Image (cartoon, rainbow, N blue to C red; front, top):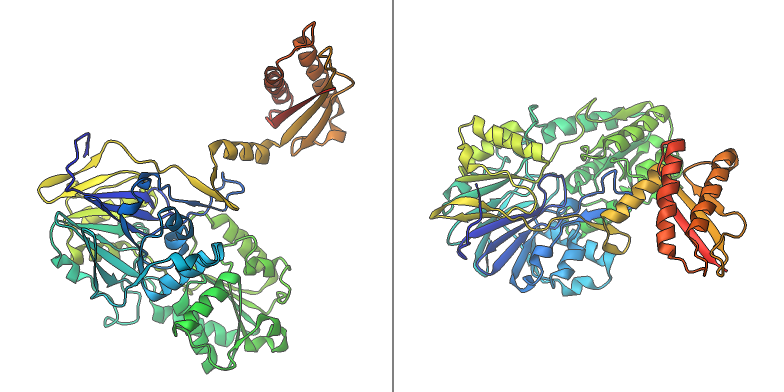
Amino acid sequence: MIQNTKLPTSNLRIIPLGGQEEVGKNMTVFEYKNDIIIVDMGIQFPEEDMPGVDYVIPNISYLRGKEKNVKGVVFTHGHMDHIGAAHILLNKLGYPPVIGRDLTLALLKSRLEDHQKGSTSQLKTIQVKSGKEQIKLGEFNLNFFEVEHSIMDSIGVVLTTPVATAIHMGDWTLGSEDSNEKQISYSHLANLPKPTILLMESLGSLKKKDLITEKEMWANFESIINKAPGRVIIGTFSTQVKRIRDIFEYARTINKKIAIDGYSMKVALKIAMQLGYIKAGKGTLIDIKQANNYRDNQLIILCTGAQGESRAVLTRIVTGEHPRITLKKSDTIIFSSSIIPGNEKAIQRLKDSLYRKCDNVIHNEIMNVHVSGHNNIEAIKELIKQIKPDYLLPVYANHYFLKEAKNVAKSIGFNEKNIFILDNGHIINFNKNNAPFIEAKKVDTSYVMVDGLGVGDVGQIVLRDRNTLSQDGMFVIVAIVDRRTGKVKGSPDIISRGFVYLKESKELLYETRKKTVEIINKSSNANGAVNWSYVKDGIRNRIGDFLYAKTERRPMILPVIIEV
């Protein structure tokens, strides 16, 4: 229900600034009276129509002028789509307190220091040590609970106010551990003060297959490593601390050496070892520079790049650009990661290249070598049955996933009227005395793109120009004009990049020069005074139409007029 209602100040307002209609850029604002709690500050990797953009961050214009109201930022876990924008946004918000588990806070601090040395000195951190902790921040009471996900120290958060209770799961899965004793139950959340609102990550709402267990995955891992004729090269996420730990422990038992490569992998390993989460063991971890000092069947290489990133380690190995590792037919390559939506083409190209050079490439389509940190349809049903929320907000996924999560909830009898599918920027209001409603006006969640050191200075016009350049190229026309007469002197020079090869397009260039001279000369006055901005627009339009008629392409046309 969408309303244009004068808002009572006692409503709990929930505002997703990212994470709806998309995968990534996760950030949700919870506002009650004059207090604000934020959950997550993630990045989204650029889409294909964003050339040159490094990543996209949430738009926080809604919080401008409310910086002092932000009582804290909860980080549910250490993946980049949840902490990746913190180094920019925390600074813009005046460094409010940040809340999270040990690994999450350590990865967050590393992210800040990479961006600006010494910035962590401004951080005020609150460590969540157990699910029994309670934190009061302004009008909000915060409780935390353990969540099963693909990175250690993942948590969910309960935000309790006098009028409603929000339960944010972060990213979660259910029952991928080895035994019923380890499986996390969320049934205690059914006893929270009513009404309760469940914000449920919904990437698994189309997944019908059973979740793979850690036990099944490890049986496959051990079999592959034991049978490998040569080196084992494992591409995985750097934040898969639990998996990296288990690989180290197994390598130690079978007397194999492990070499680590990839900046983020090295950083994550260093942090995990400092926290005591990974014990490399004496002699097990070797420098990548020493890899060629060991027999192939003694060596396991752990690296980044399983998403097909252009400069990541696995890509540099397969293209022959890695300074230490040259692929061999006897190498065994394991893709121990899921496919992040949007990376499908890059991963397929990487697999094709690996298949050409190696005889043993293993991924989840062949054998279960990765346990997803996300849910499936049955897990969604079970979660809703355990928590028994009054209202359901599917979150952190593309719109169609959210709609399918709604269908899953309906299939077990959940009231459709109590399920809300939000867009980024929607403001939904909850109060124990009234039905929830969505405000008619959205807040601004337009793209904020990061390109190098620039934050937000790449907009739609710049992107349009970049796309034009990437598709049809650039056509520069340089004309020298007599200042006294306004007439062209000589023949205009033409520079073409990404449009036509000049040596093979002499007739086209001759006609272009001729038309350019005609346009400029017709615009000149008897006294030589000319509006050159008007003339340049005329060149762009008329030469653009001419080139399109001849080639059916529209390059970016840049007229340069030099008066002498």
